[in-house]
Image (cartoon, helix red, strand yellow):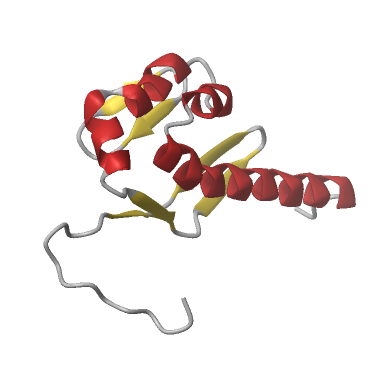
Length: 116
């Protein structure tokens, strides 16, 4: 079945919005921006970090304000999202993306990075 130009453009726009959503997670998580997380997820949205699902935008946003997450931020937490794989099916999308989390080692020797 051949898609219309409008359907193809809509799919491109949907993918761009999803890319922006995935790309916004690292800076919002690293700064504890619960207001952004609350707005980015729908009321019945799910986040699966591999240790159980958090369901609902309020629950997901609350994770950024937990003492453990705040301690991770204070310790230099840095999230890096991989380019997501997106499957579109009309108004539904399934997105899979890897997330790498880095933290500085508190007792490691300093390491210079040229030009930075």
